[in-house]
Amino acid sequence: MEEKKNKKLKKVVLTRSMSMGVLHGGELALERLIDYHKAKANFLSLNSAETELDALLNEERPEFKKLHRCVAKMEMSGKESEAVMKLRNAIKKAEPHKAYEFEMLLVETLIYQGDYTEALRCKCLEEKYITD
Image (cartoon, rainbow, N blue to C red; front, side, top):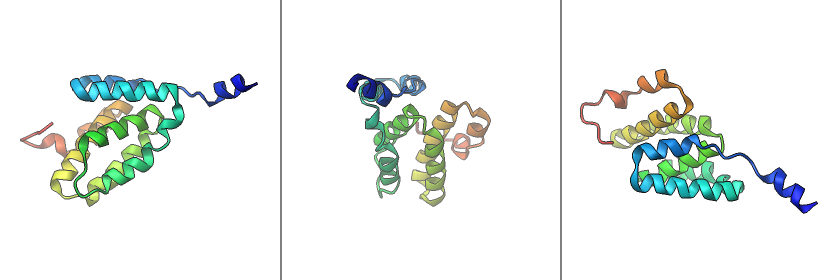
């Protein structure tokens, strides 16, 4: 009986997020791999990602690596649309440098969703001095 309850609690963790992490390579890819395995073992660990994203986007000096990991967790739980909406709102309110970084993360998330046309419309891709 207990085994049946555990099977119902286990959800599928999306792996496309892993592929996006590999594009960056190095530490970010390793962290995404670790997060993926934690999520696979305990899907409930992804539940706090949305709240965490809200907090990170509202920080005066956001840690962009944490933002990447948080958005990846939302992707793993199938909530990338919510992440896109939150990033768009944050871009509107942010000062130029933060807005640029948030928009670069938005581009990655839109690509993850397969919305290439929308990703190409983002202003950050028109910048002459791209920092990412």
